Figure 1: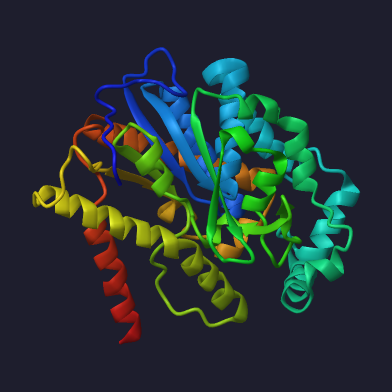
Figure 2 (figure 1 turned 90 degrees about the vertical axis):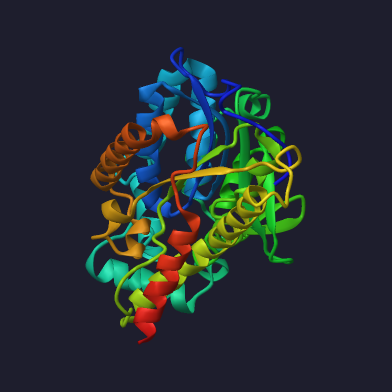
Length: 364
């Protein structure tokens, strides 16, 4: 975490005329639950007091980041907000997908969260069949939507905001982070490639899976490539979920949540460790960044939804999550705007301790 920055000294990036402080954003992936993040971004953009210098994201988080940046390039803050809404409307089952496309993904994978036997069938297929068998033509309607909506030549030339999109190298199991100058629709598809649903996305002969497995979202690019000390994490996968999963679906859901949070928890531990060494005088603030971590989480908003609801694509569901994200962002800004540039608003040690305490209770 080398380098010094400071939202106190620099206002740039995606910003309205009233922006006075600069932050970097780290956006988790989580399928349809990414609509919560859409709401958070919409409220931040509407508020207008923050400039967004850099954004890292995985899967749906990466989608939100790139869509927002491209919309901003074409129409400023209003353009960014409009483009986000357009994206989520188009990927909904009430959006622009043809009936045949919805039926294909719905019947094969349960991707649209269809009720009853359709969902059970999709779940069964995902468990016993490979996407190379059930989708040999590798049809991905999301890519068509992204290609149609986003002008990637503008994104690659963008110098208003730094973008970092994570994916997982299938062969090495390591994280790969793609930046503005190389981004295409394929990079976003790689970041969102669930291996039980879609064939691996090959870029330059290298196969990639969902970035959530190795960086959800990646924090380290924001340590090294952003001047702002403040990082606002938008977290949509719960760290703690009470109770013991008992059904096969519940067990798979919880395993996904745990795996999608593992690298984030490791990076948070690293942030806490470096900050502690800086505060103890063992590391120099001239050489190491004292990161100020903040978080808006969807724990309350998503408490009544199962992890598998991330596969839902109903427009009304997206709207509910967007509205919850907006409320959460407004509440966070009201409570913590003045803390930006001064202090962290998430106690990482307490967060990790709460996780361990919950684990101990479950074991007992």
